Every structure is written in structure tokens, then in C-alpha cells.
Image (cartoon, rainbow, N blue to C red; front, side):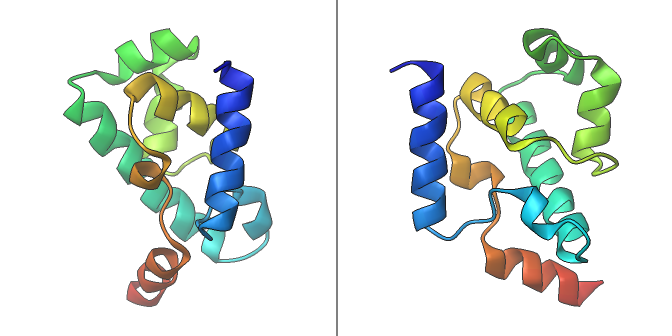
Amino acid sequence: MTYKSYFMHYITYEIKEQYVIILSLFVGFDLMSHAAVLIGKNIKLARVKNGWSQAELAHKLNVEQSYISRVESASVAASCERIYEIIHLLKCESTDIFPAVSQVKENQKKS
């Protein structure tokens, strides 16, 4: 399976499963920041679980280490394509990274 078909497969799967996958849907809404926080935390968990540093992940993505730090801290929202690259590199499931809508709403209520 090519990376592009892998990417499209997971987009289709996630839409059907009603997970938050396109952060741009939330632009201008309070949910964006809550989704980005959860996604960032989940990326960090998956990265640490794999024993990778931010620098190692950044190198494989051909980005700066500071970018990974900003994504994990939700200072910047990564594109869906970039997140799927991370999922592919860390060999995790998209459900490990993308929170369910209910999780985002619950996180929103807590703040």
C-alpha cells in the first residue's frame, strides 16, 4: 500500500468512525484548541512509548525539533497530513492520536 493510499484509507475510516480528524473544521471554534491539546498529548505519549526524542521524530519528518515541541504543546496545530505521517512513523493507530469528539467536548467542559 502506498503512503497516499494509506493516508486516504485512514481518512475514510476516521470519518466513518466520527473521530476528530480535520482540525480545520474547528477553525474559529473553541473546540480547535481542545482537540489540538489532546492530539499533542497523544503524539507525545506515542513518541515516548516508542522511545523517541523530539529531535529523532523531527529528523524523520524533516522538520525542526521546536516544531514537534509546539505541536505537542498545542502552540501550533499540525496538518492532518503531517499527523498521519507521525502515525505512520510511530506505527500507531489513528485512534491513538485523534481523540473522539466526546473526549474533546469533555476536555472543553473541564476548562
